[in-house]
Length: 309
Image 1 (cartoon, one colour):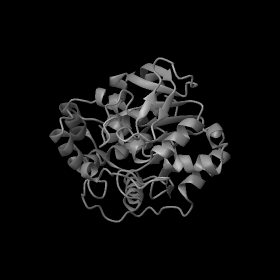
Image 2: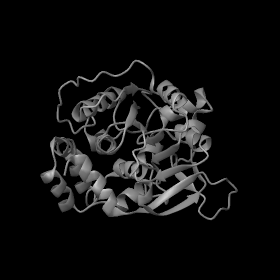
Image 3: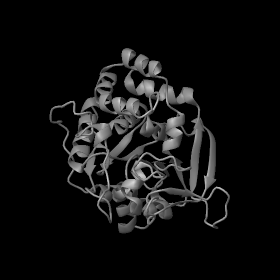
Image 4: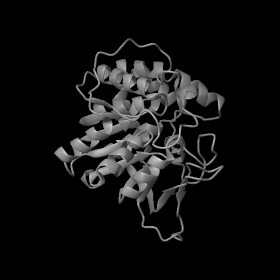
């Protein structure tokens, strides 16, 4: 597997944490750019810094947008991830210090310094990416590949708006900007992550065999695991980790469909929905490779490596 350098835009978040551990275990991370989403920006930036401390890296962390582009968010995900985004474990203040440059400006600068080299993995709301697009319309052309964790391609979302997935639903306008600006991206949606859950005993095995990273993740995962159990989400669902796996190992994708995907901005019941033109009726140019199935064994190996198992 080629070690492709990554830019990671994120809102840590428990599942973001696992994805970021995977990235540091298996490739080179140029930067973490951070937005509000799962919880507020103060917490997400602190959590990114905590992760960099944990892996002993020097990865720069850039704080970005504290709110969506246009409307105030209708909900966050503290009820899943804990009020601090990391299960309310109470970690000490991290030593790693965030950079002063805004995340959107960092995305623009880093892709100018390394045009066509960096794979961008978007694990949270797309606010920072959208702002970068508006500040520099040439930004998408300098990104080697974009992988987005977001959406629910047949309407089985995970928010108060039934068809919507959290990352897209948190900032639909930002998603609209990004989906229109990038000619092609990989989309790993919520429904795919549910299909690729692992049995609980597999997860427990990783934790038992793992190192300090496994112990850390198991601690922060407690609140989310309890929520999943109470809401009929069976097995170990690793949403952002699946998107990261697709970024790290593109060959693991065994089934995908390329279609035009757009974002619903106005529907009373459907705001934030990802609308897929499955039957090519609307005339839009295909812009998304929708990942439907991956090699589950290869996915598991990447998680195990990230946890030291």
